[in-house]
Length: 272
Image: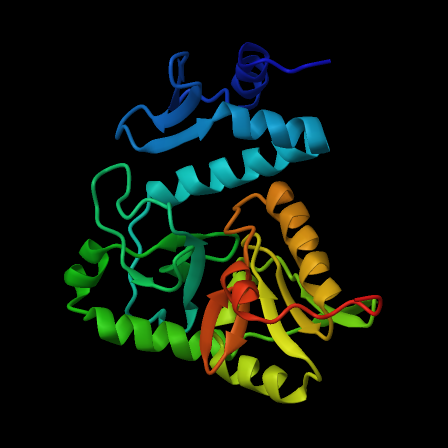
């Protein structure tokens, strides 16, 4: 049975009943918003995205959404400080289309990464994290460079637990601990250089969503197609999608594979 926005609105209304929250539905924009009555701070959900996940994963998708929203709303009502919490500051990867300001107009701190992605910065709060904005830095007298340096150091300390799968002689290594920073491992240059040295073929990397990163040892042309299919599948399933494109790591630079594929000579078929 096809789920409409009206039906999804009813499902979410049942989930988010709370005397301290206000719920609104924007029919024109197809969005559902939950906010604190007192402060007006809240979260706007795009219903078509939720419907797609619900049709794919059922109630599990709504359970996951409920947990994220409740935790985010809780964080909004608290004031967090960076000083003394330096070991909990990490970079997070987001799509290039991700907002650079909060809904309240606060400017988020971010760095350019690739044409497809940006790096934002987060204060880890245990079950979730808060993206760091410029006001947080100014309040404590921190510079952006200091914060970025700390985050860069911390991401290198994150453990890497990869599982290997071989398809058509190409090796694929999956890391997914769902700690919120799986995709952030792409910023660990020491790790990338180590893999580059160990791999027999070319090092390709995919970060389809926040909670997974795929390192691929590409040894033949089929490997690129297989990685592209994997990336698209993960991208469609992710709670926080990043990009369906994969990257080739060469000379400490990440470049989208579809660009580099045009530069590479095609392998001749045996019957040519």
